[in-house]
Image 1: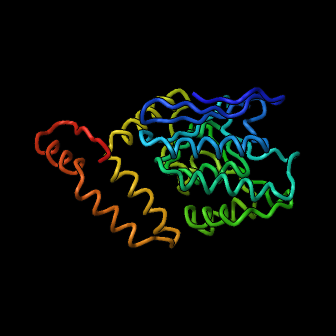
Image 2: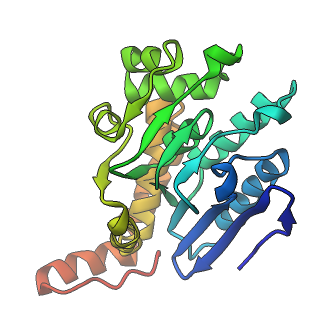
Length: 257
């Protein structure tokens, strides 16, 4: 476990690693888990820590209290805030493990982009999202605009970013922001179920497809690297094990090699 000291408005995020599953928890519930400048540095450090752990296949982003995250502390905005937040969101999107955001309530401002940067998003039925950037005079950073337009569509992106419209859980699911909506009481169980399923996949195939799907979507596919990864997977123990387990109707035991 890795944690940070207390802060005047709550505690900094915490990272816990349990085998193939890592969990980052936001811990400022009294402030709707808003992010302070030092939190951005902490979170980027956690992502790099997890990337370096070969055994970790799933990274979960969770939060304490009734809200997921209120985004960046408006009172701390300065000329570097947008760039710092964009760097965090980009690192989260490019994280080696498969990422899941557990949306336990309201998700606001830049935090909506942190959720979009994750591979999966599970929300409770009381979730809502709202981005007040236009009302604050804040022009959202490029990476966030790209994620909004590419993942939610241009019309939805304009409603949320230009019109500052509030979406409820049903609308968040309808536009593709949420992959699944569950009752608050069942969110931990659903997170554990999905995390366990993902962690049970063949690592070379799971992480390779995540990496290259993101690159294809962004137009940055490295064809030579893709071919090398395919060749590695084709020659792997895991592919042989997966085929044998399928034939024998049993659960495969993957080694990531």
